[in-house]
Amino acid sequence: MDTDVAAPSVSEIIVRPVRDVDAESLGRIHARCWHEAYDEVVSKATLENLSPRRMAELWTHWMNQGPAYRQFAAVKDGEIIGFSGSGPARDADAPRDRELYFINMLAEFRSTGTGQKLFDAAIDDGEPAYLWVLSSNSHARHFYEKNGFVADGAEHTEPFLGEEIHEVRYVR
Image (cartoon, rainbow, N blue to C red; front, side, top):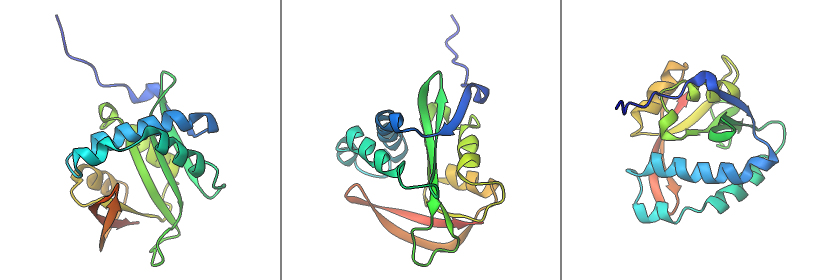
C-alpha cells in the first residue's frame, strides 16, 4: 500500500479578500498557524493560552479598518488554509509607507506556492514595502529575499504573547 501523500496543488488554492463571515475560521487557522510556526520560539504554555476566539475578534477588527488595509485568505475546498495582510506602516521610523504585516499558512501548504499567491495579493508587483520577520526563520527570510527584499540592518525584540521574539527588518 502506497502511503505517500501528494503535496497540495497550488492550482486548487484560491486567494481572495477576507470577508466578515471568515472571522471565526481565520481565528482558528491563525491560532493553528502560530502553534506550527512558533512552537520552537516560545514556550508551549504560552501557545496553549492562545485563543482562537480572541484571534477571531482581532480579525473582525482588522478586516474593518478600511481600504488602505489589504487582507486575503487562501482557500482550498472551501476551507481557509492561510492568510496575508498589509497596510500603512506602523513604525515611526518606517523606511516605506506600506508594511507587510503577516503571511501565515498551515504547515502542509508551505513550499507549495501558496505563500507566493498570498504575498502577491497583499503587496503589488514591485511595490515598495517593508516587513519584520523572525531572525531565526531562514525559510521566510529566503522567501522575502526571492521577492526583492533585503535586510536593512534594523532589528528589535518584540513582545509576543507575553514572551519576546527577535525580529529583523526587510525592505524593498
